[in-house]
Image (cartoon, rainbow, N blue to C red; front, side):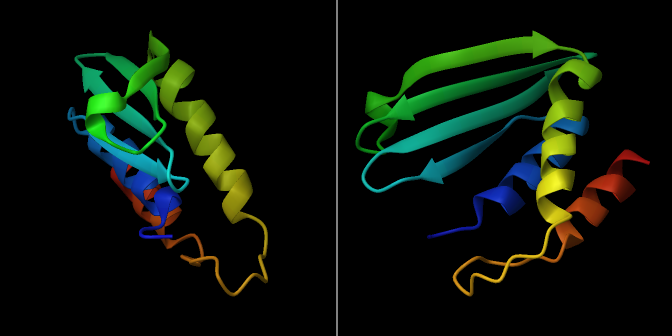
Amino acid sequence: MPVDPLSLLVEALITSLSGYSREVWWHLEPAGYYMTIGRSKDKFEILLEYSFDSKAQTKERIFSATGNGQEIILPIWRALSEFYSHEYSEPEWPSSNGKDMKKLKSENG
């Protein structure tokens, strides 16, 4: 795995809370999913795209939603919290020990 996508997802949540957009690439070799989370004033947007060859030119939108923080950010945060609450023994899994979530909590108050 080139980069830990869960850490990137936490960073995308932090970035969106600051009013900017960030893309997370879920690399599946050769395919990939791209998740973009952004914010405009009090509305958040999430966009999910798929590319059969992980190239920007071939991305196709498969899902998008707009809503407030409780509708868009909170469900993702809860899923990440649940994931990080477990112990994983796979040596290949990049373990952040929840430090990303602590960073998100400190950013969000």
